[in-house]
Image 1 (cartoon, rainbow, N blue to C red):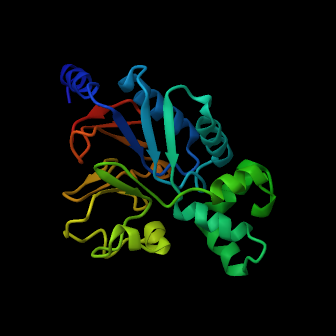
Image 2: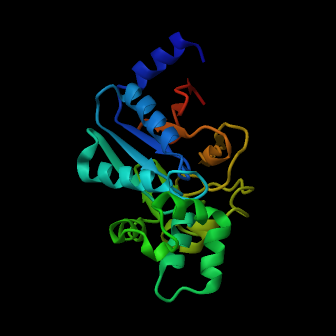
Length: 245
């Protein structure tokens, strides 16, 4: 996308209320900071909603910084950004590993999926020793969010099941049969969870995957939406690159 055409597209979408959806962060605070700055340039001072699709922690080096930042931003510390922070399967694994009645399997499942990096970022040896305010914030993350055009979840949905009847386990963990399904859904589904490894979001007719592998060397990616249509009108990544779908 040329700089001229990018500028024209940004000017056009600024006529509408904006929602940015952001894929899996996984402790990559620098990429989150850079991506939000790029989104801020697009919104140019206007208020916008940001829907973060979960997996703020684990694997990357700065889980504590990410959670600190998001908690502060939700309390109004970041001007004109209205954040909706969903729960991912990594948040759920941490909640289970930090619970009073945790099992050894809960502990091992989390550690084997990047939990050690989160412990390092908090300088503790036990997930139950994380600040209680952080654990409470993580426990209270919703599983999904809907607007007039889209339904946002971490992993996806069970095809053929009404949105109101989806199981938490599917919203947090599902891959198949969701990823290979061509069936229409009640809303356009925006999700993460499954890294694309191409560096690009995976846009399909009925869904969009925004996990572009930030913790595996890829960039962190956001999609810009308006109320004009369900599909994204623009993509932007943590390098500041913008392009049309």
